[in-house]
Image (tube, rainbow, N blue to C red; front, side, top):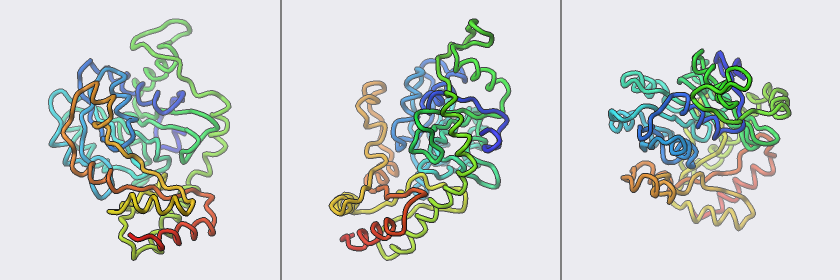
Length: 322
């Protein structure tokens, strides 16, 4: 998997959440230090930040991609900001060039949340190899999914690799000798690893089929008032087909009535979550995040989608009053 990602090292762990938490712990963050993240990615990064005793700093998104805005990051960070979690949301690579530049200028560690972006690439570099650490999930619904839970971290940094290898198993650098920082029991089990190894060569083909689904939708529904994902080749692996509609709720109800599932990923910005408000208090709303959250809808999108299923979704949307 390290070779697939274009990195030197891969550390298997129990799940994607463990990957994020271990990545943050490996950076030796001090209590109260801040980690920049987006608020539209389902709490995954925010929960990890809070779990290690740090504080989330919410950054607004680029409306074109719904990923972290480099301009917003530059405006928001301060001397207490020590790291950035960049989520490649829905399978689309974030603006890594812009975000890397800002991180370097301010001495910030850069963590990539690649849980939805297996194989996403720009100029030959795949997700996970742009920052200091890339974090992956192998949950069964992912573009590369196991039979159960699983996760991984990838890195080019030798020291981080050694720390993370120890931290995934109680901090052991030798058997039964735990060294700081304290680790946990979080290993990728052999059955999941064996299955993932068999599936890995198929990922690029599956990603291409996912992109083709979105292409078919967008061409057939070009006359509908929908905003489609900004796909540019392999920069988007179509983990989800997320469209935006001013009549999102009506469209979702219409599809549900026609027995077509369409979800909202995700309906509540992290700073509005009760658990986050209890931990850090209220945060200022982010305008682009708020606008996106009110309009997003995920249409069915998976590699094995049949022609009949595609036509059913297209027909249902054409019959909607949007």
